[in-house]
Length: 228
Image 1 (cartoon, rainbow, N blue to C red):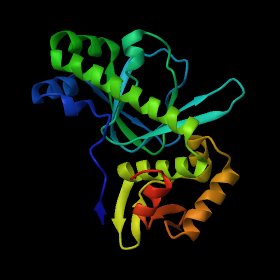
Image 2: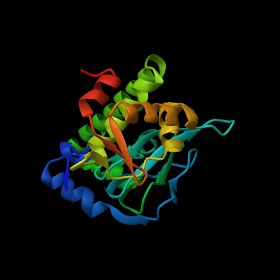
Image 3: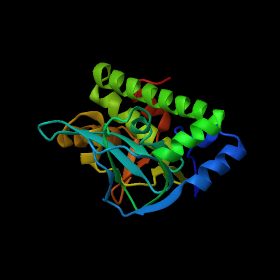
Image 4: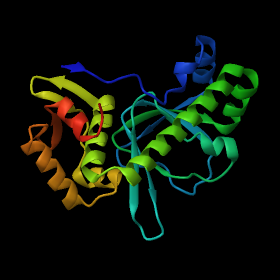
C-alpha cells in the first residue's frame, strides 16, 4: 500500500535549518503516552511545547455544560502547545493521545533559549502560530457558513490528507474515525453524521470496511465539500 500523506502542516522543522533542528533535538526530551491518556488538560499551566514523532493526538475544548468540540487530529511532525509557552496563559484546549504516541517535549526554558540563540527558531515560532490561527479561522468559517454535508466531506478529505493510504478499493483512512468523533469535529449529532455518511455511501463516494472509512470517489467528495 502507498501512503498519500502530505508533509505535516504544523511541523516547525520545515522552517528550520539543519543546525537549529539539531539544537531542538538536543534540548528535547522524549515522552511516550499511551492511547487515551492526556498529554495536558484545558486550564493546565503551560510549561512545554510538543512535537509529535509517531501516532496521533486529538485536540478538543469543552464548554461549561460539558459539550465537546474536537477540532483537530495531529499527525507525526505536528507541533502543538506552543501558545502557552509564549503568553504564559493556561492551556486553551485538551490534548489526548488518540493512539500510543511518542513526543519530543521542549520545556518553556528550552523554548526561550532557542528563541534567544537562534533567530530562525523565533521566526519559525511565529509562522507556526500564524498557521494555527489560519486553521482556527477556517474551522470557524466552515462551522458558520457551510452545511453539515459540506463540513463532513471537508473533514474526511483533510483526514485523508494526513492519514490516507491508497488501496485497490480507494483511499483508506489509516486511523479509526468513529462517528461520535466526527460529530465532535463538525458540530453535529451522531445520528446526523450517520445519515450523512450513509448518503455518501449510497452516492458511491465512500465505503466502510471494519469501521474504517474508504474514500472511493475523491472528486465527488471534493464536490460535496464545496471544493473545486
